[in-house]
Length: 449
Ligand code: H79
Image (cartoon, rainbow, N blue to C red; front, top):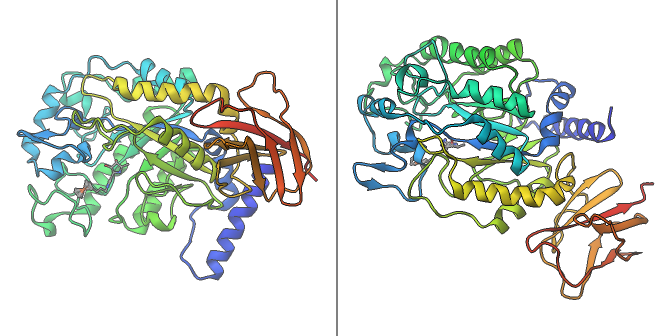
C-alpha cells in the first residue's frame, strides 16, 4: 500500500475511534479500508466539474416578468409555486440543439478537471435521461428526443473523465407522492394534502427504478451525488447504498444521503453549498462551488467571482485535503456560457504549470501560513504564495527538516532558489517579481528522516 494511503487509513481510523469514544454518532456503513480504497481516484483527482442542467435553463431566472437576480435558477418552480401543468410546458420547448458532449467534456478536461457530476434529476423532478419509469424525461417529453447522458457517458469514456450523476431523491416537485421534509420544501401548491402523499410508494416505484436505470444504462459511474434533506428512513438509505453496491461496487456515494452534516452516510463528505472546511478533516471532503451565484443557468446572474478568488480558493481547498467541484449552468441551447468557459480556461492555464501541486497531494503539514497555502507530497512541500513578500524572503515556520532544493514550479529549468534552515524554520530567497500574480508555487524538497 502507498505511504499516503496508509496515513489516510490511519487518520480516518483515529478520527472514527475518537468519535465513537466521544459518543458522537459517526456510524459509517462502509468499513474504512474499503472506503479508502474506493475513494483513491477521487482524492487524487482533486478537481471536478459540476453541471446543473434542466428545464429551469429555459426560464433562466425569470417568471412572468419577475427577474431573479441573485437566487438559484433551479429553484424557480418552488419560488414562484409554478403549477406542475404550467412547468411541464417548458419541456415542450426544451430543444438544446447546440449541445455537444465532446465539447463539454473537452472544456472540463482543458480546465484540469477529472470528473463530471451532472444533474440527472434535480428537485423539479424532470429526468434529463431516458427513463422508462415516467414520460417526464428529456427523450419522451421534449422535441430534442436525445439522451444527453448517454452522449456524455460516451464522451467521458473516450477522454478518461469519470461521469457522475446528481440525483434528487427527497425533493421532487413534480411527483404527487414525493413528500419533501418537515421544511415544507415539497410541492404544497399542487399537492396540499400531506396525508395523501405516500413517500414509500414514490421511493419504491420511482426512485429505486430510476437509480437502477442510471446504474445500469450508462457504463461505469464515478459517483452518485445526492442532495438529501432527511426524509428517507435509515432503511431506505441502506437500500440505496445496497443498490449502488450491487450494480457498481466502485461507485462513490457523497454524504448528502441522509443526515449529511454528521457525515453518517457515503464515502466522502460534501460540505454545504459553496462551503469550505476551515481545516483538514482527516477524511475526504468536497466543496460544491459556483462561479457566480446560481447553479442552474440564469440570464441575470453576471456577478462572476474573480479569478483570484477562484484559484486561491482551489489552493485553499487542496491545502486542507479537499476537492473542488466547480459548477457551470449550461443554457437551454446546450451551451456552457462563454464567461464560464473563459474562467475555466484560465484555471487550465494555471494548471498547465502548477497541477503537480494539486493532483495527488496531501493536506498542508504547516497549517495556513500568512503568505498563502501549502500542499504536500512525500518529501515535497508546495508553497502557494498569494502575497509575494516585499523583502523577497519567504519564511516557512515549523519545518525543521534539512533542505534538498527549492525552485519555482513554473520554471522548466528548476533553477535553485537559495534556502536556509534555522531553529524557527526555513527561509527562501525569492526573485523580485512573482511569476504568477494570483498564486506562484514554490517547490521545497525536504529531507525525510
Ligand atoms: O443543486 C444546488 C442547489 O439547488 C441545491 N444544492 C446545490 C448543489 C440545494 N438544495 N437545497 N438547497 C440548495 C438549499 C436551498 C435553499 C434556498 Fe431558497 C434556495 C435558498 C434560496 C433558494 C428556498 C427558496 C429556500 C429559500 C428560498
